[in-house]
Amino acid sequence: MIATVWRFRVRPEAVEAFEQAYGPRGDWAQLFARGEGHAGTELLKLDGQSAQYLTIDRWRDLERFERAKALLAAEYTELDRRCEAYTSEETWLGIYGIVE
Image 1: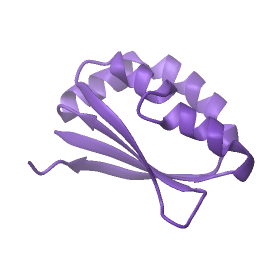
Image 2: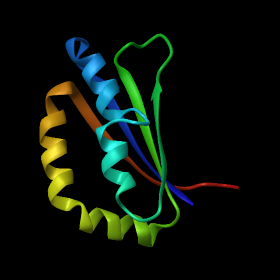
Image 3: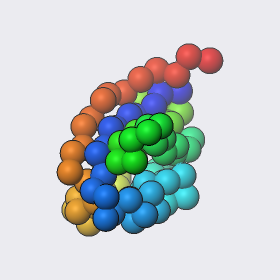
Image 4: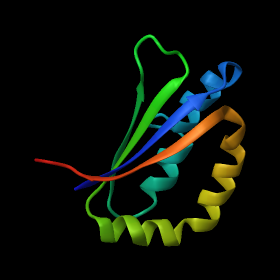
């Protein structure tokens, strides 16, 4: 299993919309669920920091993640463009192996 991890700084006026789009049943999770091998999405909020979040998307393996990324590329780009307004900062933290 692997996890893709992103860090976000969210605009105060967009917190609710961001949480809806990036949460475990949100727009991103629904998109990724269409890709074979998606095993779930988590949204973490930093304690005491109302605008800092991490997203963790779990995948069965790197190969299935890469295939899903290619298959969903156009929709990913469109959703990313729409969600851009919610954040002031977006940082890719990488692909992590999940220790089981």
